[in-house]
Length: 431
Image 1 (cartoon, rainbow, N blue to C red):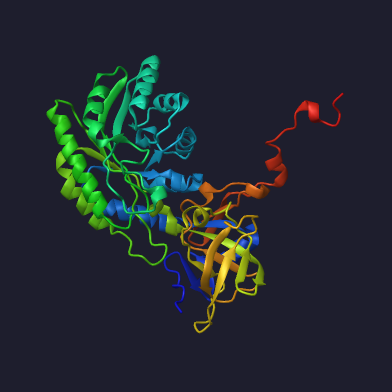
Image 2 (cartoon, helix red, strand yellow):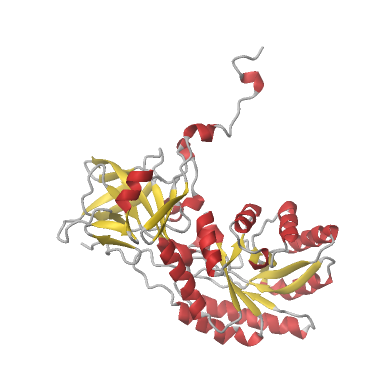
């Protein structure tokens, strides 16, 4: 019977209870209630600096893929470290600018940018728009020409490389919706150079998320090097290379990709091209810097299974339901080393069978009222949350050493209802 691994890094047991850096999680739960997300500022800084150190000496900008966690405090923290942003919507663009990330360090990706989003991006003066289709290229030309500006673009190509990750987060295979087919990329770049209002500057790629193996990067980057050489042979300039992101994190004790080894692949495959480069890590900057705190509501003893029913639900953390994703679950109060484990289904209160975090997970006893922590929950947690079952979005807390602050409060039910209205003809006072 295997035991859950003891927490490492910013979340660890100290004096019999789990702390976030220097703050007991139980104290945060008492103050803000549960469920609640808790982030470690120190670990986010550490993760960013690990990339910066590995890539030292290369002309590489680090633009945080903020879809992983778009909280303003997290963005401001990374901006202070020197990060730019990779955005995928007009809302994310607005958030990045509000957090103090300069427009000149923002890259706009995504397959379905609207005319208004393109206008906003060009008006802000962002660093680059990553173009994912020929219709988008035409749209950018029309918008930029009407505005009297020149759009800096990179063509995102689909290199047809299997990232060997979950099918729902793989983006670089020929059947995926992202990017321009590799076989059309050379022709598309020439077309971009011929369009008014468009300035093609480079090539971009992103093959997927949560990659635990580095070989797919080597294959994709080698294909990019060949493509850039061919485009230059056509007499066109290629000044920039966007290498995407996607480095995975160990949710279940896997070996994490080594950043120094990744940087070595960059040096071997594309550094000789002389391009200014961008990488866009997201998950690997914030995932292990966050936990989701929850409280046990009931322990239900069935004839065939034991259920640990917690107050967090699939609307708060959808990854297990959406991706069959694993999150280590640990009691906040440290159990004795010889505590026996038993299989439990960890479930939430939402009226869906899919509201299940773990099945037959070997766990120590946790009583009703006890706290548990869902580990490695700083990425694709709160940012993917919803208000399903009229459950309010949960608060987010940032810890920095021995100080902490609520960086997103829990909205009240009346505040949620204030967004809705009843048509005049349905009101009780309608004549």
